[in-house]
Each structure stands twice: as structure tokens, then as C-alpha cells.
Image (cartoon, rainbow, N blue to C red; front, side, top):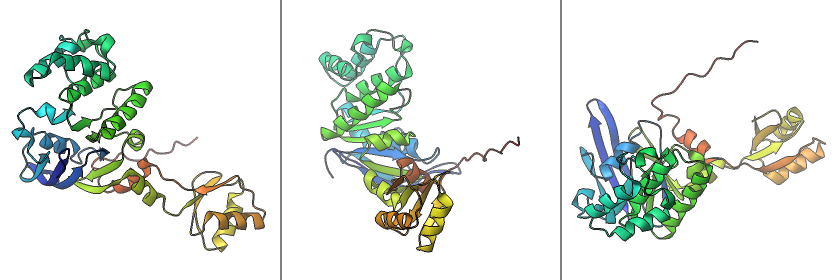
Length: 310
């Protein structure tokens, strides 16, 4: 096992009749931002709590740097984490971090370094109770960085961030991985995971249902489909269908085509004088990938809204 690595193997846990984890297994490797995603109730929070020694399991192991978290003498020097960016509301951000640093034998100068690193220098002496959610997220990240750990675990770090904060967070996560750290990020925001993560672990019903690179997952979901934009969709459908293509309408003037390469589609439409303004390789989004993978793992699903008659 690499020094900076999380290894989760065969985790099983029940809460009464509820099976929270059902063989959860994956690895978080150094130098990568690993997105950890799944529907509510899929086992994400339970898994992160088990890694941090906050919950026990019926079976399986969760190791950081080859050891259980509870065996670490100074855990903040091994794993930095935020599951809930909480701080005593009447304590200043700096004093909150000083208290944590003292508990781990860390110098006060390290507190000022991480405050500067997360952009809270101008608000460090303000009471944490007056912080916005986005500022509390930054404070939580500062706490996670105190021990300069090789492993970082963040639960919903984009939550409460304004657009500038989201852009900062993406770059910050990538910079942590570029330093050789193993970074695990749980999030419901697929667009942010797509822009920040290198690898993805998708979980459902207590186990990992996908464990692969983000680019590989998107490429597999995109398939060999071609996106076509035309003002004559019925004519285009007829022409391409005769050539053996499968055509699916995606909008009033858009469709995806399977079974024919883009250059062949262009030639067929041109020969038949069917107007078109775009023919390009279809690229799925990470949200497309996620919805397809978790389609059968969603515990709570709302009914589709009824159409209102005019």
C-alpha cells in the first residue's frame, strides 16, 4: 500500500434492519482527486465515518496509510477531514484553530499559515458564529490542513460556496492532489466533481457500483453517438434511418445518431439536401453518467409532475 492511501475493503454494517454498507470496497490513491458520489442513503457518510473511526463495522477494514485511524497517535498529521464544518460560535476562527493545533502538538505559526492559505486572514479574529456557510467551509478546510497531512477527506466542500469560492475550491483541490496527496471529496454537485475530480467512486445501496477515471466514464457513456442540429429533423431522421442509423430526438431541432460516423452523416445529409448546422461527437456529462449508474439505486424518488391543462 502507498503511504498516502485510503484502502476500504468489504465494509458491511447494519443499523437494525437497515443495511447501510454491503461490501463497500475502493481505494483512494495519492496524486488524484477522487470524487465520492451516490444517492442519499447510499452509504457515503457511513463510509467516511468508518474511515475516521467514528463508526464500527460488522465486517471489513478501512485503513489510512496501512493502519486503522484510531491507531494514529497524531491523526491530523495523517488525515485532514471535514464531515461538518463546525466551530464553537463564540470562539474566533484563529482561536478555534489554535485549540486544535495545541491538541496535536502543532506550533501556532502553522495556524496563521493555513488561515492565509484558505483566504480567511481578514476574518481570522471574528467569531465563527458570524461566519457564512462558505466561510465555515474554508475554516473547516484550514483545520483539515493543520497537520499538513498526506490524505484529505472533505464532505460536500462546495456546499455554501459562492461562484468565486467554487472556482477557488476546484483549483485548491487540484493543487492538493498535485502535491501528491490523496484527496477524497464527497459531493452531490456533479458539475463541480466533473471539473475537479480525476477519479470517481459511485456508490449505491451500500457498495461501489463504479470505480474508474472520470474521463473513462464520460467516454464510455458518450459511446459512438453523434449530435446533429437541423431545422429539418423529420427529413434527416428519414435519410439517416434508411442508411441504418438509430436516431433519437433530443430537442425541436436536435438529435443523437448512433450507427454512423460523423463524416458519413454529413455526406448523407448533403446528398439529400437536408439542411444542418451542426454535426459533432456527442459528449455525455458526468451527470448523465451518474444518473445512468444510480438509476436502480435511488431510495427516494419523487413522482413526475403532472402536466397542467391550459
